[in-house]
Length: 86
Image (cartoon, rainbow, N blue to C red):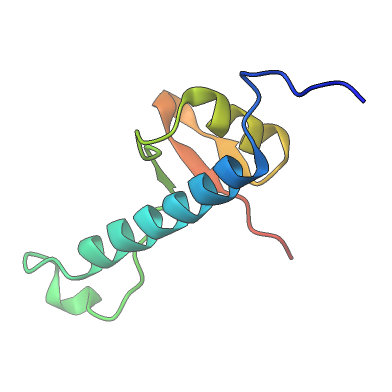
């Protein structure tokens, strides 16, 4: 049995990173939906934010591995989008 590459993220790192990503995405959407300056005619609408900059607590290798696994999709300019499984 061969050892894992030291730069390869562990399952625990990937799980923690995905959890942190989902939490940041949720908080970003909630913050956007609760803005005072939003148009009153659009109240009650969900946020249309789908991609965010990932938390800096984890290295780029973690985000690249999550993309490779199909859990995230790399968007333009360094943002990532959560892949919705049907």
